[in-house]
Amino acid sequence: MHSTIILKGNILYTPGPSEFVAIQHGYVIAVDGVVVHCGESIPPAYAEHAITNYGDHLIIPGFVDTHAHAPQYCNRGLGMDKELLPWLETYTFPEEAKFSDQEYARLVYGAFVRDLWRNGTTRSILFGTIHKDSTLVLMELLQKAGLSAYVGKVNMDRNSPEFLIEETQQSLIDTKDWLDVSSQYGPLVKPIITPRFAPSCTSELMSGLGRLAEEYNVPLR
Image 1 (cartoon, rainbow, N blue to C red):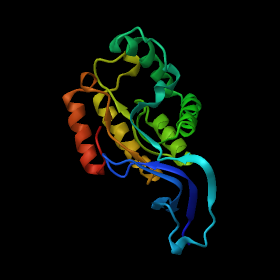
Image 2 (cartoon, rainbow, N blue to C red):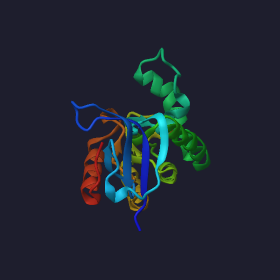
Image 3 (cartoon, rainbow, N blue to C red):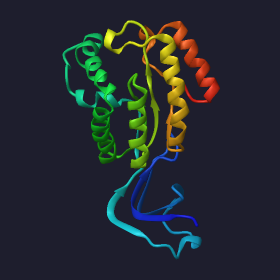
Image 4 (cartoon, rainbow, N blue to C red):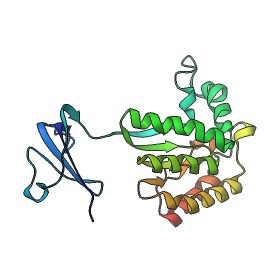
């Protein structure tokens, strides 16, 4: 049996890059989580379904964030006077090291996911940390919240603090293990291969991550 939801309200959306549509007191129909109709009236096939009427409130598509660092949630607004590398060394790397503790990860990621919901961000591409188990916690929380995301276990095997650097082969082993488990969180929450950035990844690590991306048919950030 299909699940059908019909919402009524003032609808704003962009069907294309150069199009903007506003429908006053229009209808959005979703079947099994997929929008099948957006217009001024209800097609006859859906006439018998219940309608949730939001009156003059706006109905808009969810926001999409294509680059967010979930473990930096507690650091937002800190160190605005610093350039990137000093900021990473002073604030971010010490904070990310805390995610070796899954309970800490669950606490912070739980707050992060709740804020995604509160702000209407329904799709995102997220960095985790080098810690595979804590990254799985993030994926679990996103799935339970019904949010769509690509989530990456971060890889970094050079030019990084001693407390947050990976050995190359272990990084690849952990990534493979994480990929094996992360498939259970689809279809809304999916893995994405996530080397932090070129200065923190050796060529050997990048090549290995490329092979994993091909083997598991997952995107590489």
